[in-house]
Amino acid sequence: MSLLDFFLRHRSEIFQSTLEHVWLVGIAMLLAVSVGIPLGILVARRPWLATPIVGTANIAETIPSLALFGFLLAIPWLGARADRLAITALALYALLPIIRNTAAGISGVDPPVREAARGMGMTEGQILFRVELPLAFSTMLAGVRVATVLTIGIATIAAAVGAGGLGEFIFRGLAMVNNQLILAGAVPAALLALGADFFLGLLERILRPVHT
Amino acid sequence: MPGENQTNPTPTDQAAIEFCNAGYRLRDGRALLSGLNLTVRPGETLAMVGRSGAGKSTALKLINRMLEPSEGEVLVNGQSTTNSDPIALRRHIGYVIQEIGLFPHYTVEQNVALVPQLERWPEERTRLRVTEMVQLVGLKPEQYLRRYPHELSGGQRQRVGIARALAADPPILLMDEPFGALDSLTRGEVLREFQNLEKNLKKTIVLVTHHIGEALLLGSRIAVLEAGKLAGIYSPREFLAATEPLAVEYVKNLRMYEEAENQQ
Image 1 (cartoon, rainbow over the protein chains, first blue to last red):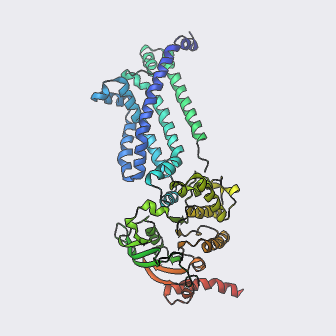
Image 2: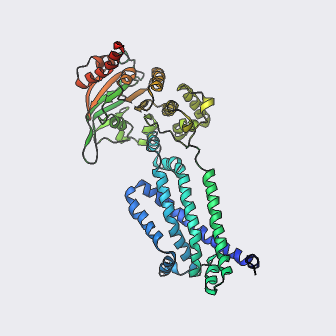
Image 3: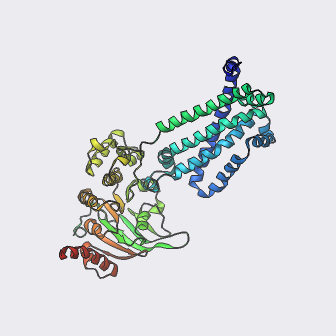
């Protein structure tokens, strides 16, 4: 039986798992963006916080994914549900590029622009929302793009704790020494990653500031 | 002399800006400015000259509370800056810096409209005002309003910077080396135009420069700062005849060019 036949026969299962995968990554990214951007702003505002915040995110990044899933399993509330656990782990991985790029984007705003904004009588909030964030936007988006691609890959490990997703096929295929099963998980995951990279890259190019 | 026969535009004889024994020190205790006593009269242009690090920019930033005095106080229209809301204060004081600091993601129109918009002017009034300001600084509105700063030359950018500072019609204008980054030809052009503007606008202007020619050309009085202290204050004519060492040095510098010219 050819690989294509196998895919066609199992298309509803594959589709189902792909949806699960997208869901895990999507929720994790929402979480990471809503935590990471404020943290990135904080780091840009208070440079002395860069070491503790970026350092912590850096440590999370260096823990091997399987170990991180196992480690979180021991935490009471988190370990109680597989998807909760998986989403938390994925969000932790996504955090670093988002924090780093947000901080870099804001710190990259030309100091005279900030001085002029202050001198014109803009409030801190107005400077943030009308000047700094718009100017940092494409750098921030690049961070989200890296984080998304990273997370789509790591999300295959989520199946190890029973959170579903395309990793299901991969782990089952490994256990049964069945290449077609492995590919049924790996190929859609790779396509998802490529698709997300392409789409977010496109968005980055469309929204690229006109001013450089 | 511009400083002498000056008719006061406001009925009160109040100073527009007053430094009362004002000083500023860094956290490490180093004083950038100390014991400054200086009055800027309404409608005059006070030029501040001095070496780099003499405290000129620091003094300027005390006026719109970009910095707060560590001793003494600074009064703007009779009110201490530390007792006024910095946001409201700054919106009524135009601010022009050497690096200009136009918002790169805003068009010329949006840049100039900034303070009127912050002050919630009606849209129509803002639009008219922006067009007027852009014209005032010598740019054609139909040609430039939609451009972004990166599509402008250095001289045009500085004109836009001046238009932005004047947009909400602030009575006071602070300028920190406004022409410093321009090449000498463009500088001459913008300077001449600004001289005309200055005559018509009747603003209180504080101009920081280390270019003595600018100070003589635009200033109704010239304050010389040295090592964080006021070394002297002169009308342009007095300045040229002053015996204070720094002023003498400046004048010598100025004469240097004339001599070079005479030698030819």
